[in-house]
Image 1: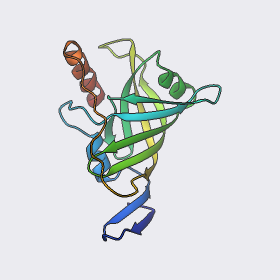
Image 2: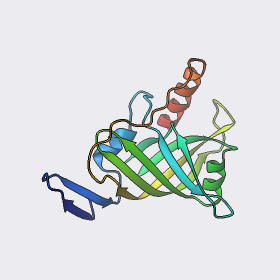
Image 3: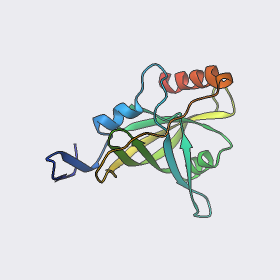
Image 4: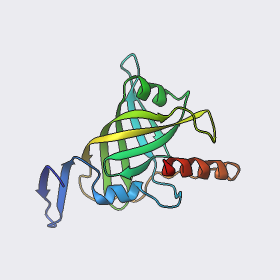
Length: 163
């Protein structure tokens, strides 16, 4: 699975670089039945070269080589992904997942039927880097929709899963 491996003092093998999501990372981003995954931080570059990062609670792993998310169409991240395509996605999740995923994004649905202000994008995974340097992760960043948005969010996740 990994291109480079090192041994840590406690004899566990840690990978450094992989061409796709390792199983434990895939499982963290592949929640069944519209369960909410840990929040992903997506980094892009504005048209003037300024870096930009934003949290996304809708990101799901479709396969170890493919991520999918929904985005507000007037969001800076959406504009950057449409213009440039390059993305870096970070995940921090217990007990010991800290990764950055480099990939290329594309729009697969310009307007969602459920809410035309949102689009669905996919990110092809090009490289996964293990950023865990030792210790343990105590908690992940999690997102919980407000009660009045629960049905809407579940419908959006259902569409992201169904494509």
